[in-house]
Image 1 (tube, helix red, strand yellow):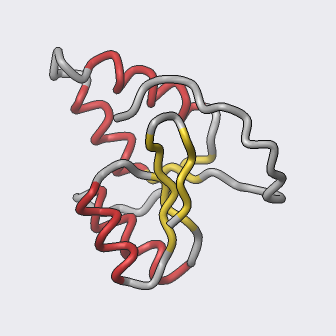
Image 2 (tube, one colour):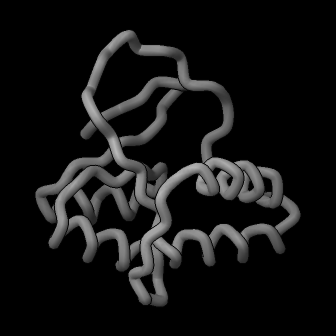
Length: 105
């Protein structure tokens, strides 16, 4: 998970609704048991608390996100390389961070 601040790009992209699936919250809670990922997981959970949560009832976060975006559209925010490839292969878009820059693919 990337750390750091995102600089203001100066772009207006319109209305955005952030959705966090239940399975992602579960995955982040599990990462809190890993000492090397604890602080990133806590930060992500704090951020997720300010967003709308949705119930997908799936077991695996990556597959849940892929299935959701195939049906409902939208853009998935992730830094996971395999997930980015799968989403792009499905013809959907991904937002990620690289060197504190927001990348839309």
